[in-house]
Image: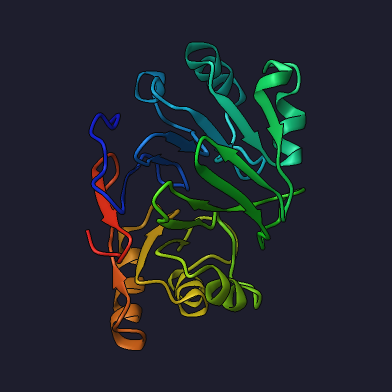
Length: 231
């Protein structure tokens, strides 16, 4: 499941590795793990940074984070609540707190924290812009919120991950609303343990916004997606 290849120009590689929002993301020069939970250390040994959206059990495994950081010397970029949990586990120079509106660069990759509509202390969603301009919106398990429409216009996302289950209020319909608001070329339904939720989401996309492509990912499978949203 670890990604050994380098993506083609204007593309990224990703793996969805659990039933939550766990994503392994590879750009031309950097590898990121987002919300690593229920994944083996051996698959994360090449990461340059770990991004944490919030402190809930299905997004933050402090023991795993400690092990990965020790094995890789990677940077941990965390919301304030997750950073507080990790403050005694991670070297201070390797733990960066990111708040809504802040941007942190990892090499030439930009990580921007944005609002998250979820019942956690200080949750983030992340806008990740690769070295060659591929823009990914990782929504954690956020529900839709009106500002997503302006974000879609301003950021011009290439890829948006949409939560379609598990968390309270999340459904294929709420995931579709995220897609409708942000209007990317490619949407990816995740954060569910019910495959039919992804299929319902896909049907909504095809019916209501047919110009948007929906990719239903299989867990632990590597995908390459391009700036134009085609895999």
